[in-house]
Structures are given as C-alpha cells and as structure tokens.
Image 1: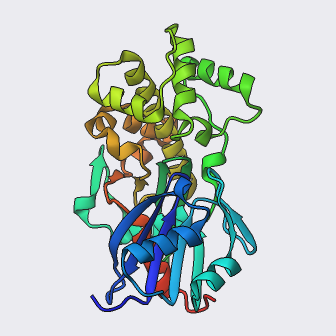
Image 2 (image 1 turned 180 degrees about the vertical axis):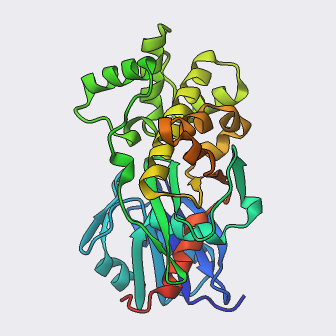
Length: 321
C-alpha cells in the first residue's frame, strides 16, 4: 500500500475507530480505541497515526455520534467537545469532512458485501428504493438513504430521540414506570447500551422479579447463554420495542429497499435476535402489515461499516475545506 493521503474515523460514545485509505479508497489498518482514554479526537488520531507508523494525512472524514453543524461539536454520549478548526490546524489537514455517524453508516449500505449481512425474516429489496438504518450502540442511531440522479443521498437526523411508544399493556406498564423518572422517554432511553440496565430494572419491576443490577455486557452475555430468565426477558422486550421502532422508520421513509440494523449490541445476540419478537413486531402495523412483510430486514455484520461510508463521502466531497 502506498503512503496514505486520507484517514477516516468513526467516533461513538464508547469507541473511536480509525483507518487509512488505500489507492482504491478502501479503509485499511483498522484500529479501535477507547474514547475515555483520550482528551479528544486529535489526541486519538495522533495515537492511531503513531501506532500505524503513518505520515500525517492531508484529508480526513470523521463520522461522529452527534449532530454535526458548523462550530463546536459535542458527542451526545461522551465528554469530547471539539471544533473543525482545531482538528484541521492540529493535524495539518487540507480537507476535513465531519458527518453524522449514521449518515456514514447509511452511505455504506450499497457497498456492503452479502457476507457482511444477515437477513432476518422475509422480504426482498426493491431496486433503487429508499433504505433505512438504525442501531443500538452506546446510543441509538437512525438514518436513511435516498436514491437520486444515479447516486445515493444520506439523511442526517436524530431519530433515536423520538418518543418511544408501547404496543401492549406490559410495555405500557414499563413505559409508565419510566415516565415517573423522565419527562421524555425516547427510544434511545431504553434501546441502547446506556439504556439497557434501566430497561432491565423496569422489566424486573413489571414482571415482579427481584432486580439485581447488571451492566449491559452482563445482560447481553447472560441472555445469550440462556441461563438467566430475567436477562432473556429483557432482551426479548428490547428486541420487540426495537422492531416497533424499525417498522415505524420503514413506514416513515418508505424504505422498500430494506431496513438495516447496526450498532454494537444486536450483532452480539446472534440467533437470539433472529428468534426474538423483532421481525413480528416490525410487521405488526395493522393495515400495513402486508406492506412491511415485503420489506427485508438485515443485521449488519461488518466490523466498521461507517468507515466505508466515510470514505465514500470524502471521495465525493469536492467542496470540503
């Protein structure tokens, strides 16, 4: 590989992923760093470049788990706060593109190989139709991809912060408990790595079980092992609620090109997710159940798909500064 001129990054609330771009504009030399280990993105990128023995790149595209506007950017679920000017000056970049992490993830969808996707349920993608993506990681990201003039346009929004709605009396009881603690209960409040311990406590209360505090990693591990009934019940509830949110997203965007599920939690569930209520709840939209039955849903298995989307965005961004 020749000396790189570009670097791409995907910065979430817990991890920051970086890669160098090769001559074909493909990410190489992936490295995952802990956000908590660094004061900000400049320090993390400098550590990555030093470990890679790479010269300073001239261009960068950084996908960020936060709204991206001019001025200062602050991560939604971590303490990093930074500006475009500071990154450009400290790293000596000629071109810097900052974009929402799920906009980058959306851009990767047409380029993901079949081996990095696992379909859950039925349905087939309509050619050229809108695609949707959501993913519970530290938070809950949401985006979409629109086909226009022979290319793809990603959406940039904060759909994870839309209000969460119950679909049955048990979920209504869970949400009622959450509303006692929070004025607004968003989808991200419960459907995320940061929200899973809260959901674990609420489900225990509604189901009349003793609550033993557990971390997100412990809840997922115990559910996958199948040796903790409470954790299994929590993950089933998690997947059911996520299915409802995904179905809403598909209807809102008209995502007949498919709904893709990314993030750090769902791929770790493996076949448990496939057997969960997710797909049934995705389709459970009354008169539009038959419409959603034709829309495929996929789990993204790629280790760093947002980097692929960031590379695509950088290559297309002639006006980046």
